[in-house]
Length: 366
View (cartoon, rainbow, N blue to C red):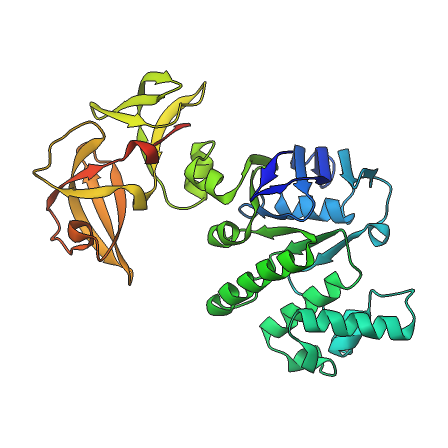
């Protein structure tokens, strides 16, 4: 399977041709989906509501029976294996802690078949792992949202599953706590080495957490890759626009080779450093932070477009410039305040030139 971050990848989970429908006559929530997740990987399923990501997660857990396809874990077909016999655990969005139990009792809930001393030692080890060792006697109602999330993680990891599924694990937390807890989950996953599949609709969350991301659309995977791959080299216009902001321009393909691609936008040649897709080339895309704002007198060389500044929005460490091109196309430029002209507050109506570096230009299928 190759390498990821310097580590050899060994297939843990294989999803083959998975199709799931909710009732006769309905469209497929998941349709003919193939996916491989490696042992020790933190894989993130990213998609909008209704894209099929939670259905896929529930099928792997055994809560949904597929209409077609196979789910194979560690070489074993799980098709006829009930949820409670799968070496898979799920951490639900609501955490699902038992309110009448203490923290220690919640963590111990899935540790059946162990003697009392071994169970107590495992609970203590798990609470220590999530920095909750001093909270064993408390009830869930006596904990903050972040503390409840840690207890839910400890309970999910206590039986030592081969795979842990997390459904929107940060959605119940406020923004500041989300960022802190996100970092804790990543650090915890690296420490325990258990493969995680995390479902989220938050693009920044996916980029910050994942070893690989699967972008879902209409029950299928639109692209799978590392965060850098799906952000910097999206496979389609949909992925480019869904995973962060993107300026998208109609383009006419002039030349494509192993050395890159040349397109034409508003009569100006624009070069992209990577080859275009074989078919369906329709647009050129570039991230707002990769566009450079130049003064109106700058020469209109290849990969430069003239426009008019319509306004700028202050976002703390940067300005977001709104620029209108001659044909009416709207462009966004994200510029650090410290970056000369780019970070300056210019009056609306100022003429500017936009430079689109070839290495940042993406020629995509519509």
